[in-house]
Image 1 (tube, helix red, strand yellow):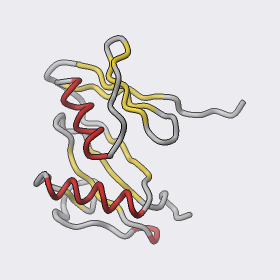
Image 2 (image 1 turned 90 degrees about the vertical axis):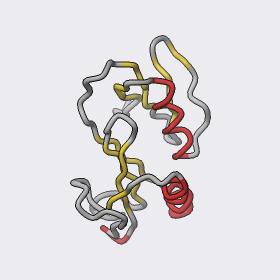
Image 3 (image 1 turned 30 degrees about the vertical axis):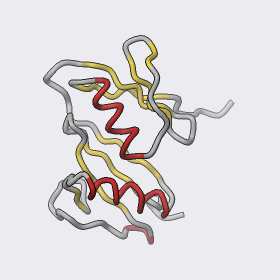
Length: 126
């Protein structure tokens, strides 16, 4: 059997709010409860298991590979909600997207300060 990522845990100040934020912006199915988690399932059968973790959280990075159409829809939802977005992971190029590797990408923050990213082409091109 080859190795596949099954899930990762995302710490949150508010589990339900964070899961709803991800589901809404990424256009995903509602996240069911499993034990202490809200399970946000992605298209490749990997899940982000959101767990309530208190006020002090590390800032983590989550990158999502999306199609061109999905990129447009997600970017549209980001703009509709008035969220700030950047072309770079250090948040220096506000209000811009990047075109690395022949695709498009952008970064934005979730309510916990996690650095979220959507890209249409994997790093290094495809």
